Length: 167
Image (cartoon, rainbow, N blue to C red; front, side, top):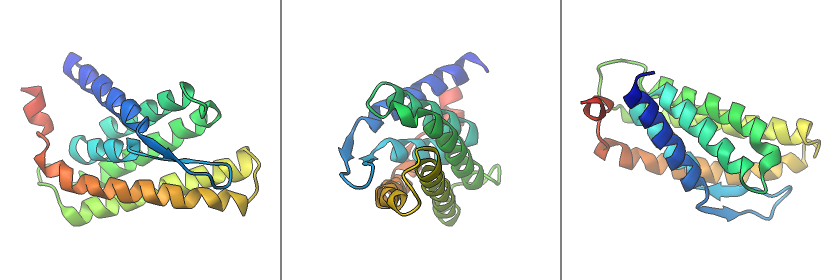
């Protein structure tokens, strides 16, 4: 990685970590959070691509988990958020040289959302062992986070392009 890429990655990871602290606890099932980390990580993936989206979301939210009472979720968060950030960035920017495409961005966030919902469901149901039905309680919170991430579609066009940051 070049120095600028390394610095951008660190800044993006920090942004996701801090934004994940802006949260509301959900008292359902095993609990859960609605936070702004998904919005920030998906916005980064939409604008700057798969690598930045994966690293920012995966590492940023894992750091949050490690430094909070959610530390048991850290391994799942790392894997799930790396994959979802990569998927969002890859789908959204799948055609190089083209501007932002709203439909492609919506599809990207929906696919990233499927990764998040299914990943955390599997982790909660099988790894944490809460069972198939109780694990369903985490889905509304994840859906809410993904809905907030859709709001990122309004923010993305006003952000500078990656090339502008490298200048």
